[in-house]
Amino acid sequence: MAGMAQIAVREVMDIRQASEYLGISGDTLYRYASEGFVPAFKLGNRWRFKKNLLDAWMDEKSGVKPIEPVTVLPKQKKPAGRAR
Image 1: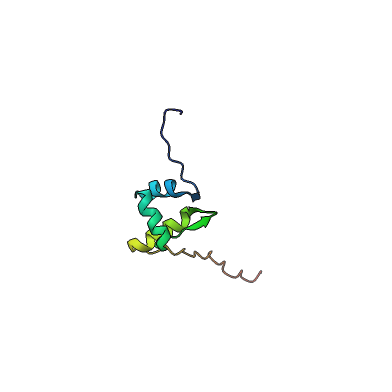
Image 2: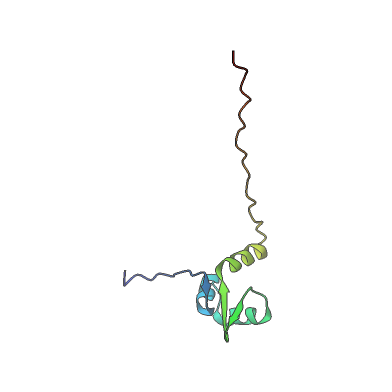
């Protein structure tokens, strides 16, 4: 596996990891984070990005509606008849 290039998607990413994940340059992502355009937070003096917030942000910007969970009710048993 040493020769294989693998991109590990982490829950919390730095600028480089998040820019690769989003497919944009690090400079663009830095500007977006500074302007509050993308969900990000600073840890010390470095920007960090949570993967689930980036995914939700991309869904919102692309017009994808979140999938609502479907509630399936269990079948109810019919009342037992009278014993004879």
